[in-house]
Image (cartoon, rainbow, N blue to C red):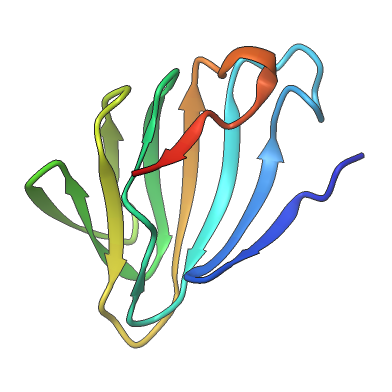
Length: 114
């Protein structure tokens, strides 16, 4: 099985569900941790809509030029192919569950930094 956890400049991504782990999966689910005073790179998902559920912490979701503050228990949807990022300006890590569907061809994340 491939490595589920990947360190990033801004924190960590842990794959929970993907077609490579669960053959018939039609979703890609990751646990994303964004460290304090950092942000994920601006990116798009060319094949999937992304759903974001905040587990703990607070952050600003930027979809194109619109900013939405999210806190524990909040959910948001990012349309397919739309640039977005999350800033964590807080003092504690931001933890979010990210669900992408449908999956990209060949079962990969379909994530592209811009």
